[in-house]
Length: 601
Image: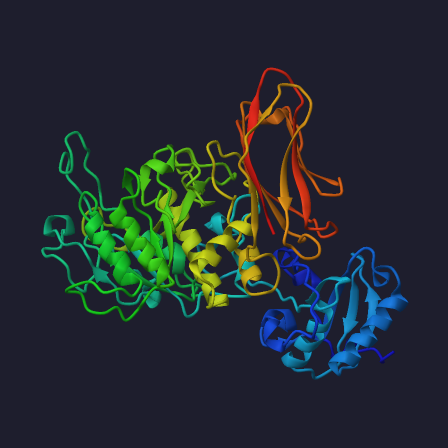
């Protein structure tokens, strides 16, 4: 055995390490290969202890039936053999409390050297996972003076777990187009604003004395009583686009104001909303231009956006015209994030919330329930913090604003609520993801956000998509440092009735074409209609009959329906075979049915 290497290790104060850093990072089971995996096949983060720093140790998890899973001597022999194949001198160090083996790689290895060793382990069918022994560090709390009020970023209950993503990515290199009311000057945002455009073609709506031009400045969208429709009250200016932009990319660690989710990103403000709203035609041109398309009479876009945020909407299903513009933008590689709407109704009746190829975002309150105003339904993809200010203003979303009741006045900050506030949380997350992994497609971004979400801690009648977006888990996943980027999904859409206070029913899904075991973060999506969900016990049954409890009965849970995504560590189960969702109603007077469920590997 090599002499102790403790003196050359970088020491970390455990007391100083944020709890957010201890989120478990897992890797899907590697498929056995005929020859060693080439270095390029091993993502950089799977060979690094920290960005740019090659790993000095690996954590190796063996499958339960492998001799190395129980025998230190076998693990030591395996390390020596793997090292010989890779041309390195490996040492088994110790057994971790989880049962995994800690393997020392020696000093002065390059990332290529480490990748070669990782490839050897990944090619072994007896290895469940191999991950670098990563260097953790304290996550410094941003010094922005209002950061402590941004519960939506960091609170455990219903925050989006953003600080845990910042040690991986900050959004650098990504432009987000905010298609909204434009931008009013704000010192906590200005450094991250790049050129945009005013797409409002109607001078009355524009309220700036002209039609389209290169100046996206927001002159205010105030209206007099009855100006937009009979019976409408007077409204002050909203400065809506500036509030949205601040959530995405407010300047951070500048000793003032708020922190942005993707504070290394840039925002291109595109003005489409003015007095009384904005027209589809202007929004369609903004979508096209933002994503790098050509719009007649408008100069080429020098700041093509890889993410578009649209915190706007209107009644009626998505039109063919709007859908065509969105499809073209996505085909150019731009992810489109939209608000689900604030009518407490099914989002299928609203646009662009009901459009295909978008990430439609519902709003959650500070307790993790669907906000009372938020739209819902099967077209919703994900939930994010949108807040509720009806009882306590501080339960809303704090961001950059202006104090002007009509035209611009002094800059300030204020709490807003809405799916308009939820959508930029997801747009900011998409920017972090694109920064961490520029090769991601819009479909991969959407899939990874859903796959790495967590269950809403509260309730969501009607459906809030995959759950509550989790920034740290998602960014770690797409950067190769843990989680799942989203994989093959197997779905059952055969409805099965659940008898009242009766025997358990089962709905099967047959999985085929997979290799090895199921992942340690198997996603189980469930859509169950029931008039008293507290009566239900829900289990996942593996092909060998092993059961995994997804939901227990609870007399205090009187909400309707179970629409959620659960994460199951199924790494000890063979992936292929018949999986079942088992549901039992344990009390009288309520009935329901399993509408559908799915497994995402």
